[in-house]
Image (tube, rainbow, N blue to C red; front, top):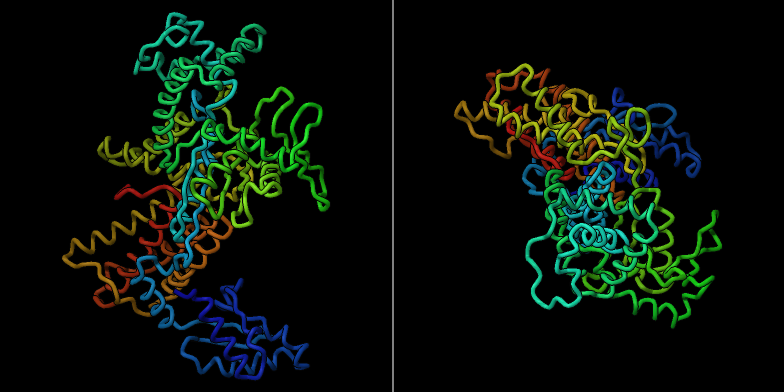
Length: 588
């Protein structure tokens, strides 16, 4: 479906052409002075020089043509040459009728769908999710949903950290605590136990204990390094224990990501990239891309246009060990082989930008990825406390993500039950939905690259620019629709009339922006565009609601039109919040 702004622009461009001027001067935009007009064209100002004519004269010529068109309710030429327009209510109503009948709410799906992989997890196994994992999960999930809504094959990959010294540390600590386990018996030839020798709680305590020991005890660290090497070289018992670590961790991670309403199509791990590394290293050497420098294997990735130093990409350290760079390059090979993606998006802390500059350049320079595949970095800022520093617990530690969600849910439960008699179980479920909206909207309403303050009071407020306010608006609409149905009437389609008042027209003009907003949100990979749109839409609905007796009118034809407009508003709002990764309750 064409965007309403394109339809209006076409009318103005045609008018410029009829008057003998270049059509391109008729490009039209939304007015930044809604008190004066709804749309504005400044083309006459630009055309004046070419046609050696006063801009107001050109504007007057064009306005004379536009006044004959049924699209416009009011058109005026304003000094020094602006063309101010208000569209007719009938034109907007017709557009909304087409939008109402469209399952995609006026958004055109991609004609040539892309395969897009989004890397947005990055959690380490054997460690709990903490607040530092929030932004990657929340932003990545929304970007994936936006891509899918636009018709693309979007695949989310958690990309777990499961390789390296942390695994050796855990294995070593388990060995010290339970040396009798069969995993450490080199002569054991039987089947290893199906049940892990630790719970998730024990596992989350084992790693920090082992990490602390390794910093104080050199012999312990050497033992952990040896365990890491044995694991990576395929020692049977160590591989079996590593598999237990994965199974226990992934089960817990799925539960915690599930509480965030975040899911992944792929649960790939760093270890999945390891088989590609030997051949990749051999290829880089053979083609002359990689060379040794002080024992390390590196690839130069700096370019003449660089304004700051871009260090070489280290493929292997001097001791032959691989790095994150190595794994990320090998992962690109894996993804290319398995999915041949048109784009790979990395949703990662912006402080890792240089790492990805190196990886992307190395992949391109060495031909590991072709020009067909776009490599995109979405670098996000830090979630900070009210002191402006990275969010911490009251004791100064890094807060577990599940504890943050519990705190938010408790606050929402308190607010929901404060002045209402409600069923406690229903209130708990509602609090979860509203609490999730508070966390996700609070994060996503900010431009991803910017740091933001996590403000519990503001994020959980039912007023202002917050998730609970958006949900409250949706629930209000649902309540009106339910009351309308309870009176024996049904909510239908195809009967939206021209607006009866200014607040209704303002609501309509907000709704018609949905497809252009979605296109922008997709192109920029920017969920905050959706947040900004639904906040404005909610405000316009609430103004219309307070100024209009929707259920109180005796004019049934007008009432039916308003009900359909409300239902369309609900559909747009619920579609939008689903793209942000949360949903609305039936009542609050």
